Image (cartoon, rainbow, N blue to C red; front, side, top):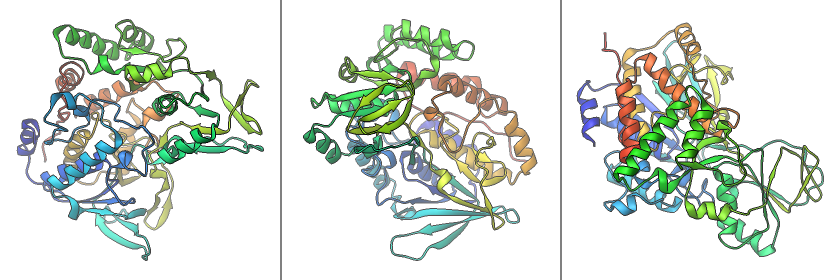
Length: 479
C-alpha cells in the first residue's frame, strides 16, 4: 500500500456498510481490496468463470494488449514487475490476466469473489435504503442475496455495441471486434476472405493491425473520420529532462481543450504527441486518448480506407450512405461497447425501474435509484488505481447516510459534464473526450472532492514523471 493511501486510511475511522460489486475486471478487483482495507464488507460477483474482465478470454480479441505502459495498469501496492523495462512495456491480454490472478492470490480475495454468478436483478427499497440482488448460477434456481447498502456496477465494456442496419441478402459473416478470437482470424485468413473493419477507434486499429501483421492484406478500414492517437513511444517517454519538458507542453495542450479544443489538438500534433494513421484534419472530437506504437502505425500505413456512414449490407458487401460499395465477405464492427448496466432488471419498491438516461449524482449514482453506482462514469484516474479513489468516495458516501432524491437530482443538474451510466464517454464518438474529462474534474473541484493541487499532482506524475498514484480526494468532516 502506498504512503498516500495509508494517509487517507488513517484520516478516518473504519466504516460499516455492505457493498456488492458486479464485475471482476481490474477495477472491480482493486475496489474489492480497497474497500476491505477501509473496513467495508464487500462481495464481488462475476458472470464468467474467471476474473480479468476485458483481459479474460471471454472478452479479449486476438492481439489485444493494454493500451498503456504496464505501470499505468498496475494495482495499488503490487507493481506489475520489479523490472523497469517490463513496467514500460505493453502487456498482452494473457499477461494481464495472469497479473489479475496474482493480485487475487496475493491479497487472498478468492473467498469474496463469486465466479459464475450472474447478477440479473437489483431490487431497491426506499423504506430501508437497501438493495437485494438476484443471482443466476448455471444449473441452479435463481436466488436473492442481500441486503446491501450499495451495489457497484464495475464495467466499462460489458456489452458489445453493434449498429442496427438493414442486412439485405448479405451471405457473409458479421461479428463484433470482441468476437475476433484467434481461431476466427485463422479461418478468415485460411479462406482468403475480404474483410471490412468498421470503426476508427482503438479496437478498429487493432483489427486492421491484427490482419496486416500476419500478411492478410484483403482488408478495408471503414470510418466516418480517422481518429487521433497518442504516440506510445512519446507518451511513455524515457523520462529525460527534454522528454519531461515536452510532456509539460502535452499537459498544456490537454488543458487547452477546456478553452479551445482546436488549439489543444493542434498543439499536441505540433509537439509530436498525437498523429493520425490516415488522412488529415483537426477535429478534436476524434481524439479519445487511444494509444498506438510505431509498429502499429506502420501496419496501418497504406491500408485501404473508406470514409462514410454504413447504410445497408447487400449481396456483395457493405453499402455506404453515399452510395459507394465496400466489397467484403466479413464485416467486423469495431464500434465500441455499452457498459452493460442496461441489461440489469431494476425494481424500485417492487415496481420496474427503467430511467437510466438521466444525469448522475456526483457522476456516480442514479438519483432516483441511489443504491446503484456506476463505477465507470467517475473517471478518477487511468487503470485500476481509480478504484482506490472510488473506495474512498464510497466510504464517505456510506458515512453521510441517505440523501433525498430531490437533493441529488438538483445537484446532478448543475454538473457541467454529461455522463451516462450506459456508455463510457470514450465510446461516444460525437463528444470531445478530452473536454469531457476536464469538465468532470472541474465538477469534482466545485463539489469540493478534488483540489487543484491534487489534480495537478496526478497529471504531472502520470504524464511527466511516469508515476501512477491514486487521485487524492477530500470530503467534508462527519457531522
